[in-house]
Image (tube, rainbow over all chains, first blue to last red; front, side):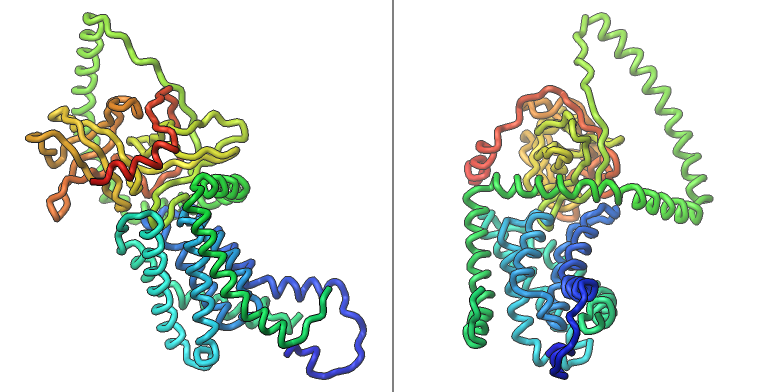
Length: 184
Length: 287
């Protein structure tokens, strides 16, 4: 329930600036995910930089689905998946399906997970990331009709699990401040 | 606008995810049926993002330079000693190279050798990683009226990087030697044996199909072969190195992990197979 509905009554109309503010705060989760995905594409000069993009995308979708599902609707997850496929050179549809499955599973586990300590949320993320990587690998093998090495996707899982605390810390700060529509 | 009851809206909300999952499967089918569509979509996206990448390239380059200088300061002494030793060695090599070059010129003059035409080239900045978990490629920013074409050869200052596989309005994608789909005809320099360099998605591509009895030697130089008219002859590719499983691999001469600028050469070669033939090729190659 939004703060405005808690005390019913007649109020002046919401101004344009405030409405824009609320819209910007609502769009923040998807917007920051897209920006982080683009940032992953710039060449930093690491070996195996390609593992970064799926890792960051998974972490963002998992975090926002868990803590603000209203701002990460299935349609947005679909678009993010398409972007992941195009930027990450996955066969089209693989990233979309993987992210949607992660979104669905996380939504189911939301009631229990949001009440747990951070370590638990992190452990579950590691499991979800492993399952997602194996799904990406299996679909990629199926679509390219050949057996691909499993090691690169598992390395991606390690990267995702290692990066999650940092990303979650950053996103949790944003979640309380700039991304909170109630503070508009 | 329809006003739906709360129950209907909830039911529709619950349906969104399954419908989108079904759509994802549909996308996979479309992607499988028409691979050119996906490539075109990727290049269109890369083209539209290239101004952002170009804008970011400058500060990132400066950052990398500053970082390199900071780490360089720490190892200044050791590096200096190493450079002095290397310089000594290279000076010896220089005199050998000059003598060989003079001899080569003399022999060519005696043989009435027809020199290869000098290829034209353009230099382009690497602005983004265009690879994925199972793809190794880089994205180059080219001007709006660039002359880069599919099949041209990319080299950095040390050796062969790869080939141009897709060209957009402002960008070009170069498939690296290390990509799973890369197959390059090469020659082992000591034995002049032909072989194929096969990308494995790892940092070192593998050598396959060399002639019987001419096993690649550890440390042997590998250069490109003009076989199949896809590459010019004698571009430096790398050095043979045996893996722990005793498989001959090639350590690429080019710094594929840290590409910043690459030169795209136009050798006017026409040996690249058209995409529709390349799609059929993997099925035929399998045994």
